Image (tube, rainbow, N blue to C red; front, side, top):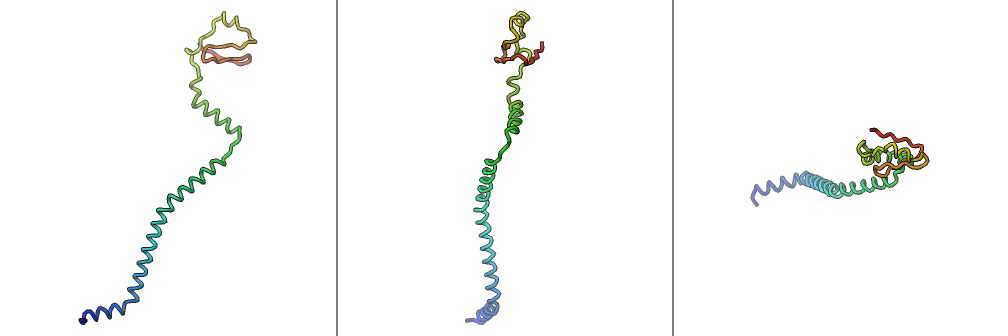
Length: 128
């Protein structure tokens, strides 16, 4: 061996503890980073799946009273379908005076606008 090789070997032998410690630390950091990466790849989708399943289970357990449901349904119906049944002046055929005399107050009055029946005691305003 040349003298340079011998000096290098002695230097490595003297610092071998430090070198091994550094290698162990680098290996531990590499393992930690790899574990975090694998954990993120597996854990994030799995966590989202479990979270969504829990939300679905909570939704299935949600209850409301029948009064709350009726109030909600009335508002929903009025906002979504109220326009379909709201009549305008052109939609209704205004009954003539002879038709009004022919109908008795005990019978139902039929107006030719989508078969709307009006019974006794119900007030209907028709604008002309």
